[in-house]
Amino acid sequence: MNFRVRLRSRSDYEYAILWENVRVEYFTSVGDQQRADQCKKYSQELEWRLAMLPSADQLEKSSSDPLADSGWMPSEEIPNFTQ
Image (tube, rainbow, N blue to C red):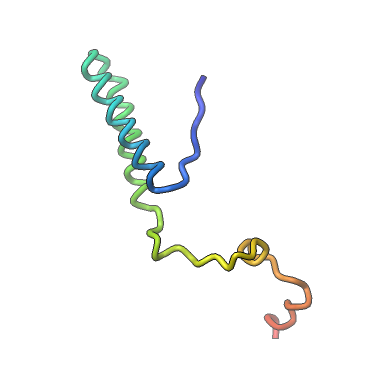
């Protein structure tokens, strides 16, 4: 069964990178260099994706209003923005 897990937080990425590094060591120790190389490739991709994540100070503050956060605006407020 092959599936992908959605990584959401920095710690998710860090654990995934750690896991891939463990797999690299395992496959290297049992002589499966092809799978070790594939795991190393996954690890490098995860490191790149982690580097691209916004830091905590770059994240926008939530207004605690899910409609506002999604970009939805009541129709009575639209004329205020189009003038």
